[in-house]
Amino acid sequence: MKKHRWKTLPYLLTISMMFTGMTAVCAGAETFPAAIEAEEADLPGEDMLPAAEEETVQEEEILYQEELPEETDVFAEPSLNPDEEYADDDPAEEEETADAEEVDEENPAEEEAAETEEAEVSDEEAVSSAAELPAPDQAESDEAAALGIIAEGKCGENLQYKLLENGELTISGKGKMYDYNVGYAPWLREKNGVKLQYRINKVIVEDGATFICAAAFKECPFLSSVRLPNTITSMGEAVFQGCSMIESLTFPKDLKILNAEMCSGCTNLKKVTLPEGLTTIGKEVFRQCNYLVEVKIPSTVTTIGDGAFQECIRLAYEEIPSGVTSIGKSIFDNCTNLKSVSLPESLRTIGNRAFNCCSQLAKIDLPSKVTRIQLYTFYGCEKLTEINIPQNVEEIGSNAFESCTSLQTVVLPASLKKINDVAFDKCSKLSAVFYMGKKSRWDTITKLGRNEPLLNAKLYCNPFHDVNQSGAFAKAILWASGEGITSGVTATQFQADALCTRGQIVTFLWRAYGKPEPKNTKNRFKDVNSTSAFYKAILWAVEKGITSGLTETKFGVNETCTRGQAVTFMYRAAGSPRQTKQIFFTDITKNMFCYSAVCWAVDRGITSGVMPTEFRPHDYCTRGQIVTFLFRNPEIRAAG
Figure (cartoon, rainbow, N blue to C red):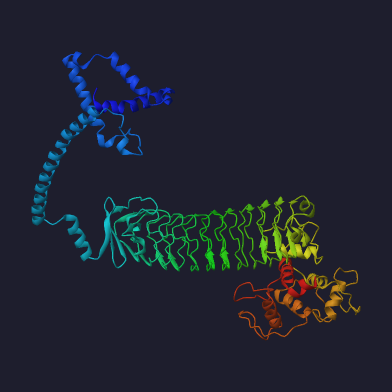
């Protein structure tokens, strides 16, 4: 057997025995020579093999040598002394092996010489070729450098990009941009250890491009100028996210959807122009756009996603279009400068935290179709003084009005079934609750814990069938009824549109001031008798100089009271304070009996006229109008 087979066979047998699970290998290496001798004893000698078999054995040996060359002896065991590695081998065999190795080494030398000769010829050819034509990559690189190009290539089937050293990125061609994974647009990658996106300060997308991929220019911190063509019809998410130097953006006229996070984190964005025809503003599109004051939302928009304007700390005014039926959660969350929001009547759903921590929001009108106030909807709205919960709402969520520290008045619908915990916690100034149902129904509403400010406020319930929450005088009528100023025409009918008489108005005033006893009991009016419901009120009014009657003997108890007379009675009851307030009603002049009274009423917020330029002093005053005048009078409210 050849020398190399003696050297490797024990290790082959070891591997084979390991795979078959035999444990005899642990007996030691001394067993291997005996095993090999036994194996050879069973085999015919090499001289006895037929010629064909001998050639097969030789071919196997050659293949074996090719598979395991001596310099890659994968089965060799480590030896502490290389000189003793084969100390037990027969010296004659070692000599035979050395001779064989010398023979084997002749072929590599010849091959190396041949390879060297071929390499020399190849080098000569390369030099000759290079002398004729410059290397194409080097030529392109030199040309790009001469033009100031630091990166260029394809970014779509028919789109190309070019980034210049001056920071200008141009995208030209036609069609769609490749839909790169986030952060893998070629101008966002590294070159020579520097991110290319740090070089971009201007983006020009030329006419012909139709689609911009998601995050195409995300977190380009020095990008300040963007020009988009009107050929673009769609854009992915987060296209300009984190581009903190952009101050103005105009979106293409045929764009229908602003996808999520489109401008999120554009902290210097001051002006944005949205196209008429836009239908959707996605999630967090303008989140943390700190310098946005107002965004004109196109009338075609029907959907506004979660957090669309979240943390826009300078946003002051916003108007939601009439086609919108739902606004997402946190839409104005932490818009700490938001003062006014106009919501359309089409709105049905307001997401939770919609106005969370809008600390400057003082007033908001909720549409009548809204059915639930979600949790934290108005949490921390510190300037909110009044809230009217729509008439279809059945539940108020947890923490909905918590920490509304200026909230004074709440109107609750008859449809209400549940008030969750902490809904009105820390509303320390809440003083009046107007419930549009009867007192017996109020007692059935589920009211969970930590709502003491609501439960301790003065409760006004609605006993009238003809007074509904949408009526202009509803709150004033409930107040007047609750304070005993009027009990209605009947127990269940108030008749707000009925005309108010002179007898009724002075009686309402007398009751509003606490029903003081008149000191003078002498009655000079023939149309007023001592059994009349208006008797003491009329005597008190004459005594206080509020009215002197129509004539010396006629008060005109059943005469209809005009708007001019009503505010004059109230002005005199307040002591006729001196007025410096100017008014601009064209139908009120300084020589009129009610001039000072109208000035006073406008100044106190009691009335603003029928129209901006008309007070209409001679129009008759209705029962609903007169109780509203009384309700708005701060002196009377304070006295009550």
